[in-house]
Length: 111
Image 1 (cartoon, rainbow, N blue to C red):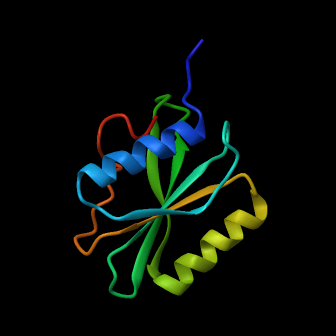
Image 2 (cartoon, rainbow, N blue to C red; image 1 turned 90 degrees about the horizontal axis):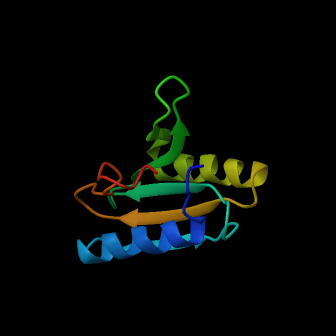
């Protein structure tokens, strides 16, 4: 049996990792503390954004972050709002970094 982190615990750990790297981030929507899915919106503060969601690859059994929406920030926000209509337990974290950093590629963050 695989042990999974609660959504709340994962979000707190992710925010701490961002804070230690000097990357501002905010929870803009709180989801279910135990099993809510998480979206990460990266905004480089130039009018664009990219929203990432975790995906599960059935062939490899691995989790990975994939792009949900990318482009003008209002369009990305609209895509996130649509996702929240379907899933009210969804967490949304907004990362604001002019360099485009989000740290999702780091070990441990896809789990």
